[in-house]
Image (cartoon, rainbow, N blue to C red; front, side, top):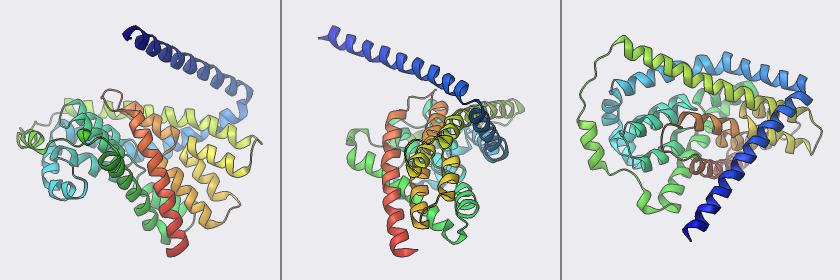
Length: 330
């Protein structure tokens, strides 16, 4: 029996390795077949990273690294605990990722959560819940890029932000507290409380700052690499004539949301449909966002598969909430 199970696991692993190798070869073939589109996609991804992602996220990542290394997150968590425990049922140690994640967006929430799991400030079960809860697009992305720059509808910026964030919270709560295993709930507050109260006050020095900066550049470089790589197939899909226009636009959106949102906003669709589709792909985050998240949690024990399932649920809830909003409230 054990040999049979082990054999099946080995076959699955071999299948995954083969699938990965075939995928890499096909990706190379696409670049060779569509060199112009590949160049444009890589260029678009690079400019997006350099002009938007790098200056927006890098300061947040560096400061977040310092906050965790200097254990300032323990004091912040202690202040935020009464409100966040009431709203989300988290422990004191789990408050900081919610704050930084909602303020900064992908993948800072995921990285902060993974760092706290790795240094045993929070348990894996709570980290998995926080990963799904607070790893979303940033408020500035929703209000500036989506509502103003793409849709030219400044008056919906707050409503759209609330829909995307509330759907994220609701999907995480549904999956882990209602659909999930009750035994895999959140961290027992007593054990974390002892850790949080044992704040020792690590002293600042430039070695810590250097480490935070280098770690920040490593993370932001990975993010840039994923954005560039996923922008290439998104650009190739956008020039192909297969399927309908809506199907093609959604394929691009599910690959890389920035390009997908741009194409949805320019499509010949009813404005209410545009808003609903944009909210849906934004809530999901795209495969590029999934890959970015995987890259920053690789040193922790957090599951990207569970995160993916919650994001699919998040996408469905965001779509339904947006349909209600545009139908009855807009």
